[in-house]
Each structure stands twice: as C-alpha cells, then as structure tokens.
Length: 204
Image 1 (cartoon, helix red, strand yellow):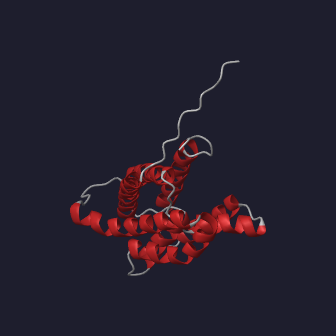
Image 2: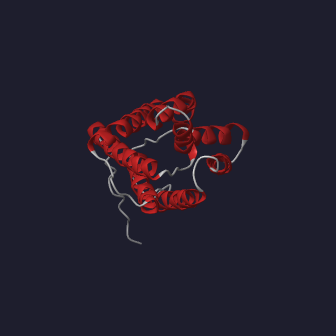
Image 3: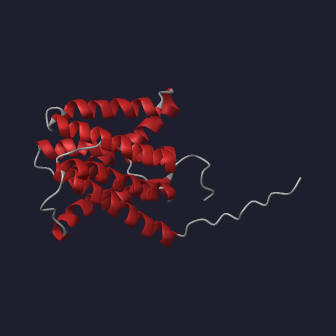
C-alpha cells in the first residue's frame, strides 16, 4: 500500500486573521443593511437586534452589540480567550460598519425580496470567512453550545426555539410577505454555512 503523505498544515497568521475578520464583517454588515432597507429580518441574535431596531429608537448596530455582551463570559469558558477576543472584535465591527455603510451607499430602488435573499447570501459568505478564522458573531449560538455541554440540551433545538420566537414576534413588526421572504433568506444562509463549514472539511 502506498504511503499517504499528509499535507503540511499552514496556520493563518495574525495579519491574515485580522484581514479576514474585517472582510467577513464588511460582508455581513452589508447584508444586514440590505435586509434593513428591505424591512426584513433574520434569526438568532441578529434577528432580535432587528426587532429591537424596528420597535425602538435604538439602531441595529447598537442593539446587536449590547445583546452580545452577556455571552462573552460563556465564550471564554466554552471556546477560550482567542475565540472570544476575535468574536468581540467581529461583533464590534459589524455594529460599527452598519453605521458606516449608509454614509457611503444608499439604495434608491431596491426590490425587497431580492434584497432579502441576496442579503442573506452575502451574510452567509461573510460567516464562512469568520468561521474559517475561528471567529463568530457570538450570541445565542454560544449559549446553545454551553447549555449542550452543561445539561445536554441539543444546541440545534435551542437555536430553533429562539428562531421560532423571533419569527412569531416579527408577525407584529413586518408584513407576512416579508416574513416569508425572511424565512427563505434564513434557509439560504444556513444552507451556505452547512455546505461550506463542516468538521474535518478543512485542514487548517
């Protein structure tokens, strides 16, 4: 039998990690702006931030940053300091960029259904960039992983429960057609992540 030579693992440098976090958060925040202008939303912590921004004077960026604050302690315990610091930077940059994008670009004509679907595509690609460099956008996902370790509650079940609550609450905020478009967009986003981020798929 021929010997199989494993390729040498080349870890990302800190500069590569920093550039990837900036690029990933730029893409996620741009997708958020498209969803915001379309009057749509998404699931998880971002969905909660959307609801807050629609119901209160608080902006999406501010709400998103504040929602994530309680989860960093869990992130340190579950993922370690490096992951937590990267995630903190990623959340902060998404919050910042959602304030900066409107200063440089404004959509005078935007089909809301196209914006919702394409916005989720852009966000999905941004998430993959962040995941590949061991960062995330924190929030409910960290809580789900922590509860799975502590009490055995499946992370996917908690995530689904939170998303269901966001969808139900959004019935009082967005129209039914936009709600259906938001659900379709969330499915597309999760399919992108499922196809491109699996354990063992990448060596680095």
